[in-house]
Structure formats: structure tokens, C-alpha cells
Length: 393
Ligand SMILES: *Cc1c(COP(=O)(O)O)cnc(C)c1O
Image (tube, rainbow, N blue to C red; front, side, top):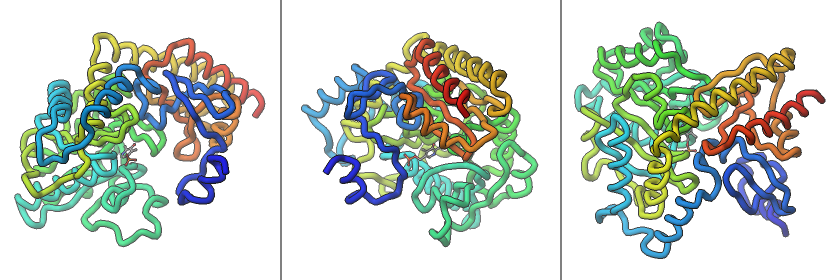
């Protein structure tokens, strides 16, 4: 049996997979079993921000794997402490909790918010989330995900969750009260179609959260770790949350998640209140240390911004060429969406056949989240492939 047959027979079909299995990756390039090469402008869904098998990360993981992998959090863990220090010194954060995925980080952030709120008042447990948001697949994180397709048939959902409209402060004012424990928002909605928050919106959420003594939580699982041209997306906006969740790119492919908190949120979770067996183990946090070191190198994030502008410019050229196919281009840094006038999963499929990896999210948005190390030449190459496809539509 080959990989595809085995997958069909033995793996739960929770994904519709493309008929490709990659065997090797380097930088922005992936290679399949036949040796065909693909330009990766998705990076494993905004995960491999330093490119595939970044030498520094791979070397550090190999070395760590031969030294010590796991001891549990009953003991101190050097790379965990160092990664927490690097995150805090490069952000608003004061304390970090490590887990293993984005959903898990959001799950923990909700628990933190509930504990924080109910210590003030037993009735203060409500969470405000947004329509079209995406926060993960655990019960609590689907409960705060504002897209029906993710929670249908899994009810009842967590109670005490209210939804407001993204980029609409009035809709938040309608549901907020002294019972609100937290407001959770993605600075740029990812799965919802690459929709950046407006500056005034995040500023307004900060004010509203302060007024009712609620925590402001930014889900930076997708936007964090350099993706938007700042180490964390909130830094583009000048609005600080109380809590931030991270995952995807933090380990460049090694599973890791984190909750970052400050001030009144930093010391809510005490011994026994929350835990994770694997969370923050040697292997994952060693990868994280290398990732943060690389991304905070002088000039790296400036280049991400520059390349993000370049990609947007190139996509806008395509929009002028194909105004009947492309409605608009939006994004922040190297998190970019081309809003199509047609359903776009077909386009992503055709791109794959021609050796370009992109994906289609929210039905009509072609999403580009390439490795941050992509070059302008590689961006141009991707645009050329896309142009050929659009010509034939
Ligand atoms: C991917 C994602 C998650 C879920 O992360 P998992 O690691 O798949 O659990 C949560 N929030 C946002 C914004 C994401 O993009």
C-alpha cells in the first residue's frame, strides 16, 4: 500500500487531502515522491515561518533530541525558561504558560479569564467573541468560534459566550457588561478570510475591556511570530492585550502553544489550576528559542514588511489584469488574501498541479502565508503561475 492508500484505510477522514505526499522540504520548496518541486506559499498554514527545515532549528532539535526530550513540569526546563524570557522581553508579556497547540492555548486562556472574572464576582464569566472568528477545535475553542460550520452537531456549546461583529464597536457595546470576563479577538482574522482589524476597533476594545474590568485577549496563533511584519501583530496597532495566545509558527513545525499574560492576568493560574504534561518540553521549546532568535535578528521583520508590500503590489497588478476575477487584496505583512469573485478551492487545486501551494479560505479568499524567508524572485514566480491559471479560467 502506498501512503495515500494507507491514509484512506487507516486515518480518520477529517480532512479532504490533495493527492500529494511530500517527502522533503527546504526553504520555500517542497518535493513530492516523484521528485516534483513545489513553491510553498502557505508554509503548512502559517507554521514554517523560517522555511522548511531551517538549518538552525533542525540542528538545535537534533542536538536536543540526543540530549534530553522530556522530564515533565515537575522540574525546571532550561529552554522553556529561556523561551519564556525571549517572549516576555520582546512583548508586553510578563508570564508565559506553555502547551501544545493553538486550540489548547485558547482553551487555557478561557480558563484563565473565567478564573479571573469569577474571583471578582461569581457572575463575571461571560466571554465576548466575534462572528467569523476561528479559535480552534476543542469544546471551549469551538464555543467561541463564530462560524456555525465548526460547531454543528457538537452542542451544547459552552454557555456564557456572546458574539459581536468584527470591526464593529457598537455591536460590542450591545453585549458587554460587568459580567464580561474577557473579550477575545484575532488581530487579523485568518480562517475568516484574512481580514485585518481596524486600529480604532482594537483601541475601542481596549477601552471597553478596561471600562468593565474584563481581560482583552488577542488570539495571535496565526498572526504571531513575525507573520504580519512585527514579532506580534498587536505591535502594528499599538494596542496591548492582557493575554495573547500563540502556537503555529512558534516551533516552526514542532508542536507548541503558549499563553502570554501581564498585569492582573499574569498570576491568575496558580499551582494545580492548569497544567500540561508535554507543555514546554525540551524539544519544543528548544525549537521555539531558535525561532524567536532568528525572527528578532536585526532587519528580519523590516524585510517581511517589504516583501508583504511587494506581494500585495503584485496581486493588485493581477487584479487590474483580471478585474472580473479578483475583487480586492488585503492583509498585513506576509499574511495576505486575494478576495476572488469566484469560489477559489478550484484555483488552489490547479495551482498545486502547477507546483504552487496556496489555499482557499472562507470560500472566496486565496490565502498567501509563505515562509517569511521567501525572496522577491520566488514571489514573482508564484504570481506567474497564478497568472497562467487565471488566464485560463
Ligand atoms: C490555527 C488557529 C487556531 C488553532 O490552532 P491549532 O494548533 O490547530 O489548535 C486557533 N486560532 C487561530 C487564530 C488559528 O489560526
